[in-house]
Image (cartoon, rainbow, N blue to C red; front, top):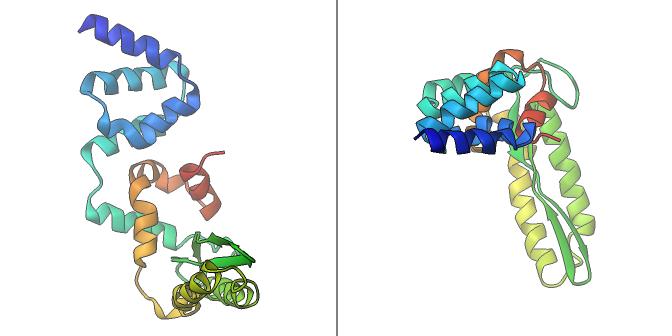
Length: 199
């Protein structure tokens, strides 16, 4: 056991801060108790934020459905990342963009977190772009463009959704432990995205 712990300690000491942070944020629930203890020791040794230890602990015990709902509620009252207003609750929708050139079709389908008005505006812009640029790839251009019309129409009507969408829940769920450990310090959607997708 002592030899295993020593090997773990040496291994973690050779990792970059980003790797340690990733383990704590997203993989702590897969570690043995010994590995978790060494990971937390390494976080402390490096003087990294206590948020990483908290995220590891939350992962190990799990995030309840009620905690998930509270995370989404707190995110939904942040300012809209596009218009900066706080008048409406934020929600999340996929907005599909299709650009085709003869035999090639390029598709982007990001999840957008914003106020209903901004989501609707972005979806309308994507619909118009797709109608002009999406059809021209054979065979996938027309197929993807038709698919985008149905998908984006839901986002165009974002103001009719009073509850968090499935896209919102699915976007948050894999990162809920890391988010919960920092939720009281997240002041805008960009900070949330940086936590989920660090540079």
